[in-house]
Length: 80
Image (cartoon, rainbow, N blue to C red):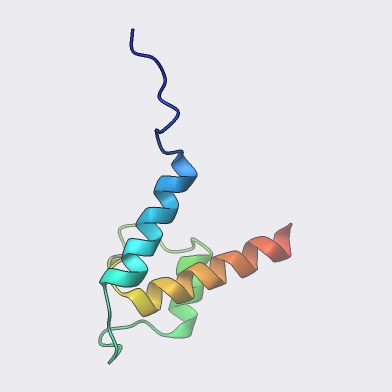
């Protein structure tokens, strides 16, 4: 049986690396196709199903993803 490797990344480390990749690799300086603030808030509050096409945009647009992360953080801090 293989031993646990201390160098294996944790789920939080993997999440962080993926978030940073999205924030870095999907520039959209002209903000083409970006949803409005109300839609971004609905996404951040998880009020839209993952099948909604706005989720696809947010996960492939660095500016929208950054806004999404900031909104989620704010909502979590308020509920804590």
